[in-house]
Length: 127
Image 1: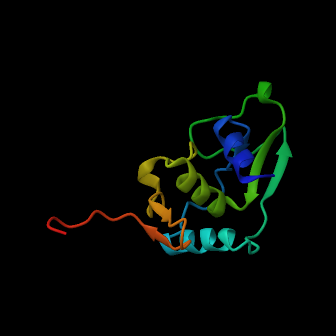
Image 2: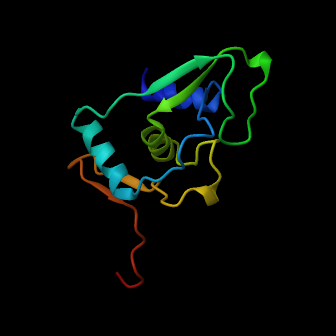
């Protein structure tokens, strides 16, 4: 599945993170390493999902209803997917509130000429 499809499935309430998953713990350097690996076309791990119509409780506000039928639940890859969601969408995924994110990785930028990764920083006055 492509990254864009994964993010779309999250936005369309078709892909969920179970409540038993650990919280988002990645730091900015973890996000930089992930994007660097993707840019260099290095392996970045897999995503393991579970298709079920009897899911565990979800993280976030959404609760499973039988009308939803079979849903996908992320069992492995949540840290990577959450990081990509924040960087690409520029927002927190719907299964997290802002106060639950200790390390905000959203402001990571790529220099398209050098492929250098850096976090946005405001220049000090007078620079």
